[in-house]
Length: 503
Image (cartoon, rainbow, N blue to C red; front, side, top):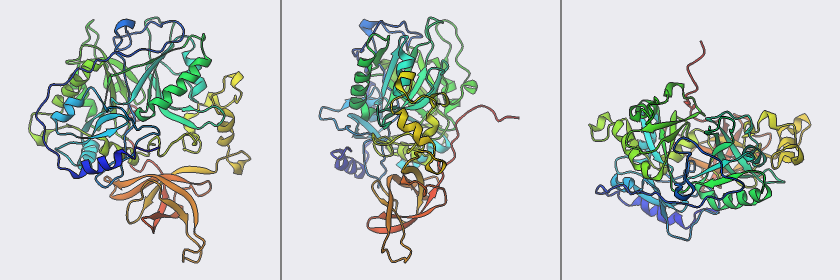
């Protein structure tokens, strides 16, 4: 289900002029939520992790932008995302208004789609050349702890969770039992604890618009693990800030300060893609969790903050990036969901509810690399297999090599003429060239003009065997057949910092 009720509101918002807003005082959004617990409480660490049960400030995390440009459809990033209640506000809501944000409903929140000082396209280019600050505090951050936490996460995802090292992350997916369909995509990070002998603490980020479905799924799965020593907390109200672009590192380094016990800030040059560290930021009362990565294909960081610190961290980053100085010297600007979507599509990244759904397996979605090498031997749950392993593991071997394979595969497309949007049919042209016998072989799931490439790009699923790069197809766009070619993804090379090049 899409946010169809939001469609006319978003289109109207994009047509309306952006009015500059008077500066407002950032609100403290320190809300307290109830942690759902199974088994005993695990001791946690480092400010962000330590929480007294009576005064817990809970946290939310990253990853659900939406496809929205001035000519783009507005859609949710997941099913069941239409909220009938009042829209919520992230911890940066007042900051958005103060900077002239054009707000739209998304995933149950008021979210910025763009700002008064930049168009979506200009914001996209600025992220690629400088750095942009995105509010992704609407996303859901979780914490799993206890001696059974790793085994639990290994059951519901195909990742190598048990061997994940502290302060390292893996991109994975929650899977349905029996089918291996994707419940939601997620990032899982193992965190250290105060007890060196206890490494059963995990920070997990899921999509905002999948919240209700994910919590129902996790609740049902956790009931099966009652007594196994698993504690699950949904961390409400915390901020999550994505700083993305080539100038992200130098900007973040300017706001890191010495810790309260004299500990030095982390060396960001030695914090590689997929790694994290606790740090102190100027103006923030509590440590933040800094993770290197993001959803744009650029180098960058995602910063998880206590609710009351989110605005201070964002303002410190904007100030370090030149806010208040000459416009031509700005290194960091706020960016909204519109630019975030075109950036992620250029990077070949999936958007749940469009490119991924409950009926799609990791193999069909070209995410086979997310199935850990050490998870490919056992298909029996009694032997520690993940949900849907019997289906997913059989799909890993193509039919041409004697395996089950898959019927369809996710691919990238470069489309001539008008941009192809979600739902557009992908065809193989008839031999007579007259359209008699045209065969539908797939469907577009995401599409937009690429600001970086100056071409129309898209993502979709096609029949297995027609997924190779260079395969010529046609896409039905507004009733007209447009030539297209299957292309490798990412469309724009990613620039993740993985360390200096080997000598």
